[in-house]
Length: 303
Image (cartoon, rainbow, N blue to C red; front, side, top):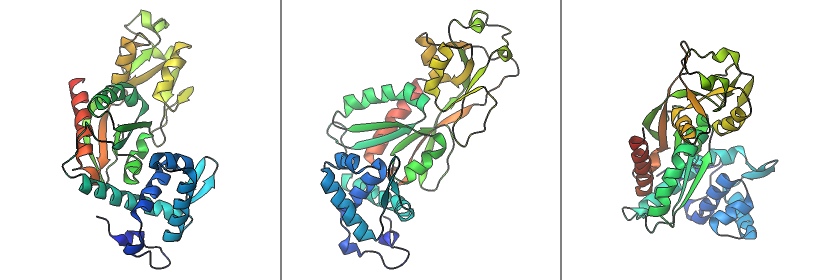
């Protein structure tokens, strides 16, 4: 477990271990994830005044304002950001220790937070959630769309328990497993001029819609989107084309939303490997092993 010295302040000794209220650390975690006193209170089962009181006690205990009001909610101070990962690791390890080998999906009330690229959410999360709702009806599974370049950071600071990302993010505190190779497929709307002739297509005559995430190599395109889920509505109303991850493209083609085209000669969009990432601290945790096992099973039987 992380040493209590991880809670020390820079300018003097931190609180003694005897004075640290574990409930306040749980409140810190909720405030860090939610960035809202009201939302953190709902997460903790506390009223807004009780959560505000917990924040006041946290500030006194740790000697820092921790969270200040910003345009989009609470914003962490520099000291708060330094404390987030160590406190998260402490709580994860404590939960794992208390859970031991007694984890039972049928009775668990665990809150499991999963982040994924939006195309992966569209393909895999309906299947995953069908399993979790059947096998763990009392669990709460939260799925959020993430920037793939920030998956490791979200796992390290405790915002996520699991992530699906095609961007390799090595870290000493995050483990990973390759799930499947992600190839990219050219797609257009079913009534597109290119959809009528599948050979010797000329993409150059039509505009491209490109999906770009922060940190990825920018491409020249007249339309740049920050989400794969935004591509189908744009293609439905234009003569544009795009490249989508094969699993997502195949799902859309099956539903008749888009048509997949053969890749023209010389056009070779790079392939990626979808990675499943999780915190090192949760590697042996029964709940984490359970949810990871489901994802491995789903992706291995569908690719």
